[in-house]
Image (cartoon, rainbow, N blue to C red; front, side):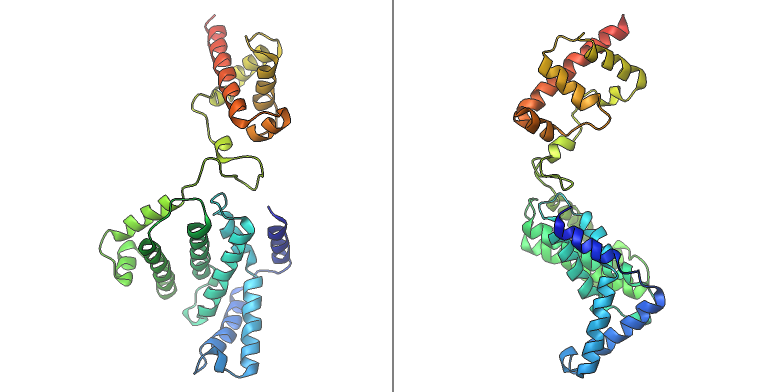
Length: 289
């Protein structure tokens, strides 16, 4: 996690979560400000001040929710601190519209706005497939309508209810959700989990790998014996690669190991595949003997 994200989460942890009664009290102060005849800016200064303080407390006490939602969008081309900022802005929008008279907790309502803000950030800044503007507009409308229906119904709406409220034909919601998943695509070279060196490729399972076999205790012992006793037709570099990647309790990523050995990741990946193929073949021969 970046320093900015760490700092924001540290601030969030200093504030306790609000209980239901506190949410109602803060929500009433915000509503008195937002619903003033003539608009929030026309409200008396004292009401504006109390409303802004209530909104600040509402958001600050729920920064952990913003952090939780922002983490769900990591690895899509947008820095975590930017996602947290977008999620926080989504909370601000939600709490300005929150109506405690409906009797529901704020977190369910606010989650939709925070997720929508993160989705928009990924669509605009991320490395996924670019969707048409009309599709983005419909997705935003669906998110907005869904949040309103949750507020009114006190439960998650059905697809038909969302389509009716958004003025969409039957089946269009499923198409939009499928388009949204396409927009979540990212490059295999994208960095993941806050690691400045490891790419998504490094975290994907290699279909030629024997990782599943090595999870078996007896086969792991056999693999260790073959590697440690030099019983494989491999050079010292490949032996070291297998030892580091598969026979250590905390193996390094391929990118990190490539940096240590001063090799490119692709060179190391090819060497690993060859070494694993040799190891797999030797294991089959030993087990068949």
